[in-house]
Amino acid sequence: MNLFNLSIEILTILSIFAALAVITSTNPVIAIIFLITLFLLVAVYLILMGLTFIGLSYLLVYIGAITVLFLFIIMMI
Image (cartoon, rainbow, N blue to C red; front, side):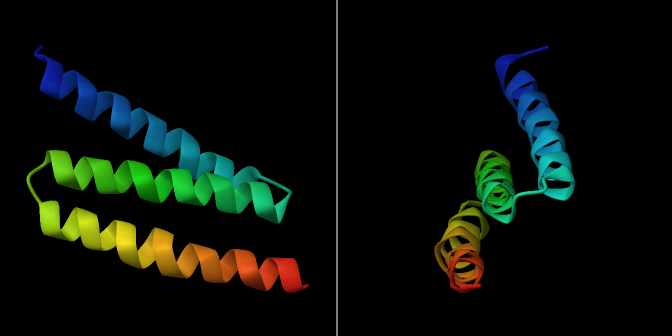
């Protein structure tokens, strides 16, 4: 097993744990922090798989816009 496969497996396991933490978290702000972590891990996975444009656009759209919008809405409640 080479280093690339090991890093992909570590990213996959961390993504699963981050997704479970988003679902099971009771505090909405902490859930959004785990959601940001999940989006970041998926973007790194896409970049490592060779889909650089999709990974970078994933970072811009999801982390930059949607997650900040969710956080803004939760802070207003």
